[in-house]
Image (cartoon, rainbow, N blue to C red; front, side, top):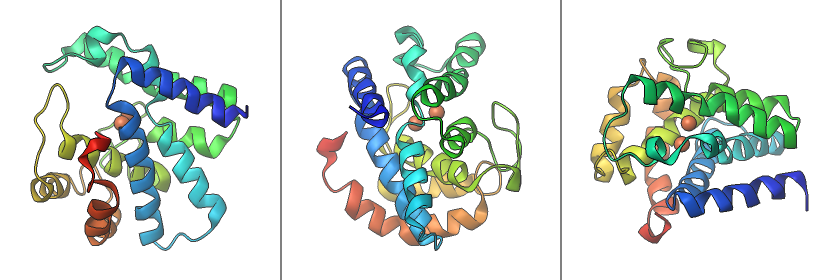
Length: 197
Ligand SMILES: [Fe+2]
Ligand SMILES: [Fe+2]
């Protein structure tokens, strides 16, 4: 078994605790690849880095306790601080297995925001790598569209509008334009069969 296969196995075990999460990883990864291709990225190596990193983006949530991970209401300050640590924990896990700095960089920055209001480092604009900026959009869209135990699902148009509302604050506006252009393709490719949820 390769180290990458071991990580996938760990994620499958994790999904026994949190059923929707494996489908979430799959869709975020596929969506990120579609957006990257829409941005003109053709290099197969770069596309694979983005696809692999985004697949493992939330692997650190393995160490977030169920009472926080599966809470049906908003997290309080202390709970949110614990949940945020999934980023550093994800870097620890993935760097142990893959030793690929480009992958760990994307995982480490996937909650950074374009305006600097994200975490863990408060990076802004072009200080955030492209893969992480793409991942942030794909990750948020999948949560907003599909809903979670703490937030209701939206329909497709509402979900697109909610993501666009955060262009220039949470998300890079240039990547949002590409995301909008790819949105029909993303819908057909990833959300036709809602069994994936
Ligand atoms: Fe995350
Ligand atoms: Fe996620």
